[in-house]
Amino acid sequence: MTSCDVVVIGGGIAGVSAAARLAADGASVVLLEAEPTLAYHTTGRSAAQYLENYGNDTVRRLTLATRAFLEPFLGPRPLLQIGREARVDDLRARVEHAVELVPSTEFVDGDTARDIFPLLAPDIAGGLYEPDSQDIDVAGLHQEYVRWFRSAGGTILASARVGALTRSAGRWRIEAGEHGLDTDIVVNAAGAWGDHLALLAGAEPLGLHPLRRTIAIAAIPEHHDPTDVSRWPLTSFEPDEGPMVGYCKPEPGGLMVSPADETPSEPCDAKPEEIDVALGLHNLGEYTTLDVHHVRSTWAGLRTFTADRTPVSGFDPAVDGFYWLVGQGGYGIHTSDALARAAAANIGGSEWPTHLTDVGLAAADLAADRSTLAGPLVEGH
Ligand SMILES: Cc1cc2nc3c(=O)[nH]c(=O)nc-3n(C[C@H](O)[C@H](O)[C@H](O)COP(=O)(O)OP(=O)(O)OC[C@H]3O[C@@H](n4cnc5c(N)ncnc54)[C@H](O)[C@@H]3O)c2cc1C
Image 1: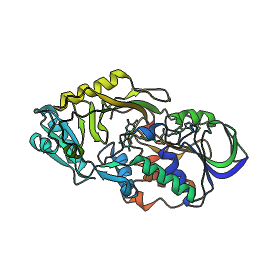
Image 2: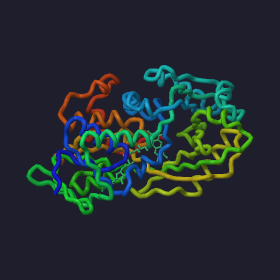
Image 3: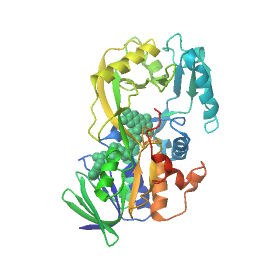
Image 4: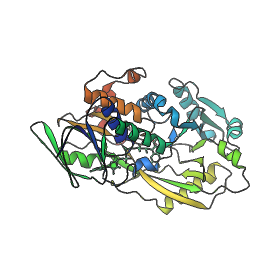
């Protein structure tokens, strides 16, 4: 039986970032991952983009608070959200709101949008432009959290699926494959499996929504100059009304294309559906002059949301020593450091980080008992 202060369950970006910060603060920490390799599920399947105007204002504040940590893993990749005439008023209004937190955001008309991304369809009438958005080296970032965790004395056990969690005399006993552990605090960083883990621990599920999203890497026709291609922004397609219907961005091996699908799913090893790949390519053709048919590779991952589309980093209100670090949705990479700092402060009982107060975030914004967690999933993207 291994004994420690904290057991973190889940070896995605949420688990490793929190484990590293807790260990660096002096706790003895063991991280358990069900799969043989870390980052196998959602963390290894993202679009690897840093976006300051993505998500609600709490998410955007978490993103801003994470930027400094991410800096060594970022490279320029502006964001352009484009639409036709019917969408222009909405895009202008979005820019007006966006500049309050991200002053560099601007509205661009159709011609300026085509200067930035020359392959936009001729009737694109305007867009929201975020010049400071970035590519993220997600593998490098994840490895950095792992390196930091190990150097602070942390232990990682892979192929260690937690199957039982029992609490007695103020301690947790955990069974994970061949391992037995005994600890004060359990951190639930199990991504799409967050509610399953809560049931094992006797906690009330939060009602998490795992939603499948598909990505295809399409071949770019050879007549496009690779240097020009490498400068294309991440471009998202905004229909006349409703949430975005896709996006694309250049990748070393081609063009990343997604239909921005949100298909409800059970927690699982998500696989892409042909129909979603086809929809992604179709929508690319609707918003650009690119005519792409050949796909090099595809994948899908589960973006797991709470009902209010804001992550949770907080103790369960009813079950002692059970900490939720879930609901990172489509923003878990670029909010990782802020959520980990919140976890380390709450668990370690230390002062709320100035990193978070500086952007106007309080512990209550991320709490597991906030009222907005009840109810249906709010619309978003
Ligand atoms: C297509 C797509 C595009 C995205 N694009 C972006 C983007 O551009 N920028 C961004 O910031 N975010 C993006 N995201 C979201 C981001 O990838 C996620 O928010 C983030 O990876 C979630 O990390 P996690 O650690 O919570 O989950 P995961 O990476 O899924 O990790 C959870 C881990 O818990 C383990 N686990 C579950 N149950 C148990 C158990 N019982 N015992 C032990 N281990 C267990 C699982 O095996 C898994 O490894 C995207 C996601 C997708 C799918």
